Every structure is written in structure tokens, then in C-alpha cells.
Image (cartoon, rainbow, N blue to C red; front, side, top):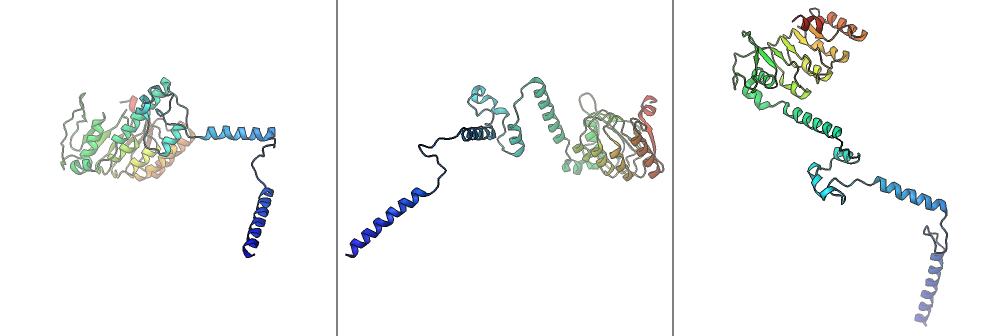
Length: 285
């Protein structure tokens, strides 16, 4: 009798569970349920958006790529954020874009090559290390008690010691027309006897570069040539760090009202300073 009652109870609970499950709401469309035009349109738009949001397949891994491997030489195996941003941009293989890519790559290499090397300064000292750095890139250097301007030959050779020599003290540096980046200016520091420094026509020299130069510990710097550079009035304010500055050469101190005002304020702050235009110096020379 007890087993029979148990079987009837289990059967009753099973029927009640199936009845409750059939009354539960569901989001799935029933076989006879018709999907409205609006719902279909929304589903199609969502599918299209998902397709657009998919990450692009790297170059060379797509089936339609030429050779499926030829362009892998230009791919980047490091999946960093810059690479991901690059992969989201349309690929432009036009001559203009390829030329710009090559120029950017060369600039990146040159910036890396101009970085400060502590071992070089330990071997040569700050004075000779700065002279080697400038002469190697087409500049010129002059030392105390030596009226000659030292320059490299057409083959890039120059006669300077390859190790520290206390008799070589840099008095003047000409970086005219050089390709000099912010990273390279770290090599010009702690030159106690430097009096003349020229960045004439260095197109890559800007306000940030001037800030680094002004903090390079040049206590005796008297002449600074910034003509032909990208320095603005915002960068001139950092020259207060050069108390012995006597001559500052700019493109045109009266080019704008802001430039004229900045030049006048510098002359007041640094009493021995005289701000002149490039025409008065370079045309005369």
C-alpha cells in the first residue's frame, strides 16, 4: 500500500511540473509565431554591427593576401596597443604613404642612434663626448686655447683623442643645418667652458629642445643662435637658467607683438643680454 501511494504521488508531481514549465515565458519564437518586420530589421543591423566591430585579420594571414605570406615581413608579432590601432586603419600602399612610412622609420632610427650613451661619456668625458657627437653629424667644435674649428672630413674622419684628455675643453659648438633631435641634446651637458652655441637652421629644434639646452649646465654660455629653428615665445622663458647670456639670435625679434614683448622681458631679466635678428648677424658675416 505504501509503495502504491508513493508511485501515485510521484506521478502527480511530474504532471504538475510539466504544466508549470509550459506556462513559463520564453524569448524564443514559437513555431507558429511570426517575427515582425521591425524585429528582423533590428537583428540584421546587430549582425552587421558585429561584423564591423570584429578585429581585422593581420596582414599576411588573410586568404586573399598575395602569396598569403609575402606581406608578413611588414607585420608585427607584438600585439601592443599601437599595433592594434594601426590594424584598424585602412591600408594605404600609395607611393606618398610609403614614402612617409619610410621617413618616419628613418627618423625613429636616428632618434635611437642619438640617445645618450653613458659608456661613451665615461671613456671620453663630457667635453670630448660632446665634440665627438657633433663632429660625427656634420657640426663643428672649437676648444679653449685653440682658435681652429674642428670638423669632420668628407669620409667622416676627425682628429680628436679617443679617450679622456684634460686639455680639451669645449668653448664653442656649431650645430648649423644638422638633423638634431631632443634625444641627442642629452649629449651636450656639463660643458663648463662653453661660451658659443649655434643651432642655426636646425629645423627639428623646438621649445622642448631649448628647455633641455637651458638645463644643460652651461654657466658661461654667452652667445646662443636660435635662428631658423621652431622655437616660439613659449620656449624663450626658460632662458633664465643662462645668467651669463649676452647675445641671443632669433629670426626676427619683432616678427610679432608677442615675440617683441618676450625679447624685451628677457633683456630686462638678464641685464647683459641683447636680442638681435638673424639678418644682422648672418648677412654681415
